[in-house]
Amino acid sequence: MTELQNMSPSDLRAFQDEIRAKYDAFRARGLALDMTRGKPSTAQLDVSNALLRLPDNVDYHLADGSDARNYGGGVQGIPEARALFSDLLGAPVEQIVVAGNSSLALMHDCIVYALLTALPRGETPWRENTATRFICPVPGYDRHFAICEDFGIEMIPVGMTGEGPDMDEVERVAADPLVKGMWCVPKYSNPTGETYSDETVRRLAAMETGAPDFRLFWDNAYALHNLTEPRREILNILDECETAGHPDRAFVFGSTSKVTFAGSGLALFASSPANVAWLAARMRKRTIGPDKLNQLRHVRYLKDEAGLDTLMERHKDLIAPKFQAIYDAFDTHLSGTGAAVWTRPEGGYFISVDVPDGCAAKVIQLCKEAGVTLTPAGSTYPYGKDPRDRNIRVAPTYPDVSEVQLAGEGLALSILVTVSEQLLDAAAQRKAIRIHGLACRR
Image (cartoon, rainbow, N blue to C red; front, side, top):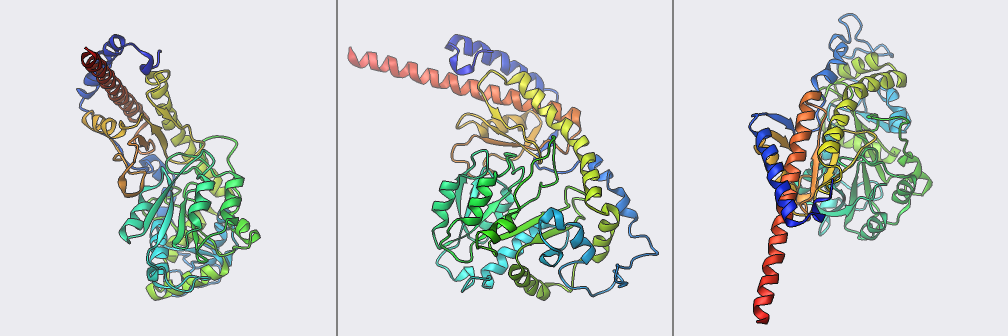
């Protein structure tokens, strides 16, 4: 197919009429497809239904003989659960916290605690600064940005390169002593799906920062969510920070929200001994301890790293066809048109689509009118404002494959309608300018 921008105005007008008719026919089907968030499907949740029967009503004791139904054990979580996730987090058991069901809540609490209480290597709480600033790779995760916005933390966007954030820009911005942290989704990033290269990880660990209490908020939410083989590997940020002489730099987060039950999983944290002691001291004022029964049932269900791998293979078998359904729809309708570019991630939960500048909001509105609801335009940028209005996040995991196929078609048609209209408008404006110029010369 000829790229749309290379078509003559008459050919483009004919194409626009044809694609508008296809879009109208799609809209007339009265569909209601939700692709707003990266949620596990019901089939994915069913994979872990054995958790509902654990621990059984006879054996609710931990390895040390203590009763998991009662108080005790401390705020870092049961030792068995911390050991289970030691390899995933890249930290020894004593440097791990296994908390409630939400890693986002742990990130939120770490921000709050840092605003109120000085971090290791920090002299004062962040709130005592004239401002607190965070580096935010874009496109990125809207819920990270929402935490900063809620607490008035200034967000500084930095573009992604395909191997992680633009490190030249990160290093420049991090020299500001008011820049206290950086959001990172290092493996299968949300939404681009890219994985940080070894060089990127090492530079993040070693870079000079203006703030001695600067922290990497290392959200490894998708570390287990592979879609292809061989699996991508990533350097251990805790080891790299230690080697670079910045042992307290990284806060590593993870969860089982997309591994077992999204609403009843486990939140994970790992860091240096000093950071873990700092967090545990704050947590002791907030809670007697986490849900030990839920931690115990996860240990008995998952058992070990091999058990985790087996479970994630079952997830991959359910998810990968949905990603392929989007690729197929895009290949059918968009390939060769130049109307969009999209990622083909090796893991994670999202596909990132870029359309020409100024088109994303219109595309998403047309999708909604056609019964395909997507994440709002701008969500992948701080303050909900994509300066180029071009990025669209696609979340294919929740609907059935047949619904994903339809959603991909609806999105592709909406893109083609929007882009062809934009090109026709631009051609009309150029023609008007030429006519005006000729009239002036007369």
